[in-house]
Amino acid sequence: MKKKVLAILLSALTAASVIGCGGSAPAETPAAETPAAEAPAAEAPAAEEAAPESIGSSVEGELSVTIWDEGQRPGLQQIVDEWSAQSGVKATIQVVDWNNYWTLLEAGATGGELPDVFWMHSNVAQKYMENDQLLDLTDLIAASDKIDLNNYYEGIVKLYQSNGKQYAVPKDIDTIALWYNKTIFDEMGVAYPDDTWTWKDFAENAKKLTNADHWGYAIAPGNNQEGYYNTIYSYGGYVISDDKKTSGMDDPKTIEAVKLFTDMIAEGSCPDLATVSETAPNELLQAGKVAMSINGSWMLAGYRDNEYTAANCDVAVLPYTNDPSDRVSIYNGLGWAAAANTKNPEAAWSLIEYLTSKEGQLKQAELGVTMSAYMGTSDAWVNSVPAFDLNGHMKMLDAKLVFRPYSRDTTVWEDMMIEKLQDAWTGEKPVDEVCKDIAAEMNADLAEE
Image 1 (cartoon, rainbow, N blue to C red):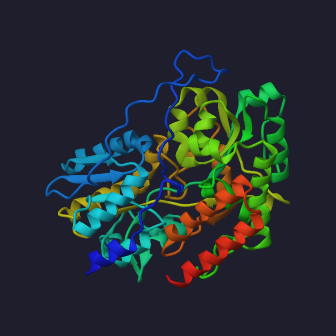
Image 2: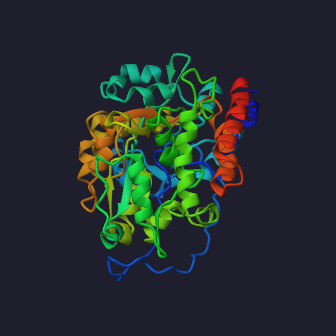
Image 3: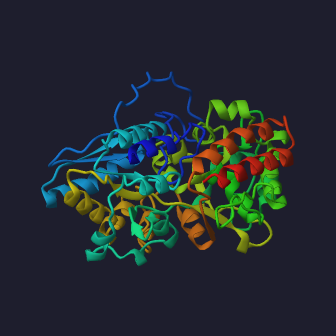
């Protein structure tokens, strides 16, 4: 019965949904032999890879590990291989893209076939925990001399708790920062963004950075954690109440924050919906078509491995609204979880313990995989990629941190929100009307949770 309930409850995450921490690396735009100051030329699209048919399954004596970010695989595999050398257990990482990951994970949970170890996300964690699909780690953590949950960011720890039990150990933390194209700024005679910028400065400079060849900034309706969520909370609005019962999308401050971006689109300093639907904002940054892009720290691997962004781009803190104290970063964190029915429970826990220990978290940071959830270990991440000043992300840890808005059925109202915002992006409906419509439907969705 539990499996049937899970199948009914778990909605597939749509392509429009943002990825949040540990997101897929952006598609690399080859720039070999291209001068640093020039945008790389378009390349013929590669043949599409066949969609995976399975999320992986548990085989006795060998661990299956599944994630959704190819950019993180090399560093994580190195850490996993070190664990294998110590434990004598082989562990292979499989990467399944974001959308297929959740579709296949749901199918695997329903059919009783899940990987031994895999990533959990705030969007769906509650459902998997409530339906007994994740291994209860509570006693294992209590008996461990390597894991003390007080060493991790509290919001991420609590995310993976249900009925007093812990079902995942935090893997990472992310912050949101302002990535910018130094070359475009130099060509347009605009000073680089710094910690004095307000959101008003941001919008005004986006105009100055816009010409026939590029826009000042790009944002899509799906860029919530990497966009308007940060501004909403910086302006004093909110997305969802603390008790998860009420939408804040009709709050006047929320509407004002969303309008910042729709005004920029209307003025031409941001590309229109058709453009960002065809080419994602981060890909426009990689192609030299936008001067600024607001991104999560999980995008580092993709930007590091793209020759154009590595040569032309850098990172700054996000702007604030009225005072530096209202500078906000939405944060999130993935969790390492194990299947409740894994055939290798001891090995699965041993790997999770190794990956989330202080030693494993330091290695994750040093290898530039992503910022780590173990407090104090992300300092090593700053120096992992010399091409960028990653202090732009690290400084956001000292800003006002707001945990990524979620509820029990996040994807239901979040996907609806993304769809409805398209009318605001195109100007088909006024922003206040769209936001009020979102709030009304979101309140109805929350009432059913």
